[in-house]
Image (cartoon, rainbow, N blue to C red; front, side, top):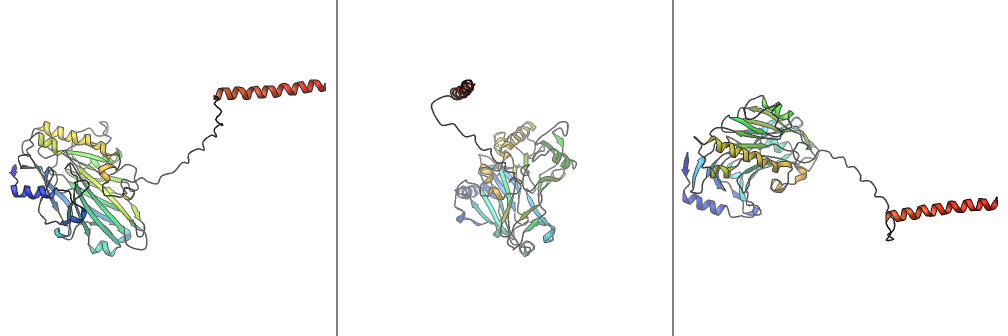
Length: 360
């Protein structure tokens, strides 16, 4: 159902969209944020994207029900006695809201003050970045070891709940012999996706906006995997990694969709033409080529080498062979040089024969 966005809110939104330096960050007031092509809802307690309304050029908006919580996060470390400890912000006001002056992205950040983490020697900065095009959201954690010894993290788990159970529209390395798509979402999908080495999926439902999840790179310092696919709920894991004393490591996952195609097709949450949803889902699949590596806009604001679910695993450096020494430049071709060498050898042989004949 479409709703009208008040003109006063749009005026504030227009001011908000003016790129500002990070120093201009202000505490989030807890209200929805009008940004780009959407009206965005967030949660501070578990620090995730709750949902987004699609905003049309006539200032009306439409409920998408694309998420009931995107990229909720928890950390497990047996060494620190942490078991699926949720990552959240202390309050709405503890979250800084800003516009990245270089990119125009909406950025929400908070320093996690949960004493369970602080007492264990972890300083955690959580960030949600809504990219300027409104088509992509990144959820990242920068985890710093404040102790004087290495800390082993067993896993960082992410949880994304799409609005309603529907279909798995597509997945990376899709194979009809393994799992033909579209397929009704099932709890059996996790091991299938892992066997396919699928690092992204796209979800489809007959009323809601379709969307995708991207969990990392195949070859990375910390392995990624799907833990559970229970209907519209997807849980995924970034595996074990170690943070040396005084150093930081980062995790980063993404959720994406294709809002412009929905606007162009006059999307309505109740009764949208399935062909429009199919086209939007297909456009989301096509956009997955961007995730071949953590580069370009994907890496904005991150130290790429510290992102454990995208950075390379241990790399074996193979030395390059020593170049062959080059003959001095004489202006002669290689063939001419070889021919000259052959004549010299032939002449030397003739001289030896002549000397032997003389002695004989």
